[in-house]
Length: 111
Image (cartoon, rainbow, N blue to C red; front, side):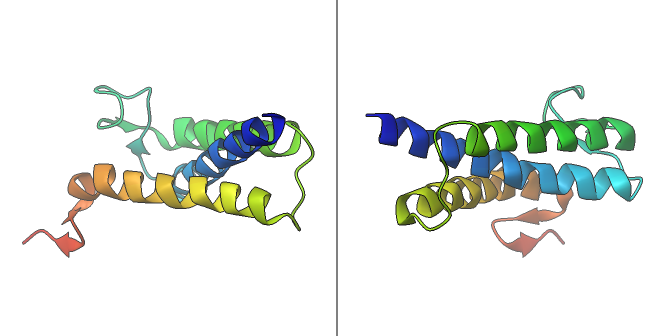
């Protein structure tokens, strides 16, 4: 049971790790991007400074979930698969949610 909980934690850590990328990239480029703090949440834009803070917070959550829960072993297939599953699934969910907000929908650019 403990191994299952650890793998769930690593999957969630992968999701937070992926989520840090667009926020840090947008924020450090000086661009606004969606955050949970915008109005409406997840659709409205937040400032670049809020995005940098949110990106750093996501990195902290990823660190806590991956490196402070259990003993993450980069040579363990279960641990790596869990981490990348969270990363991959979060990427697909984000692409589906944010695609229409940024000119793409289902892999096609809006005309």
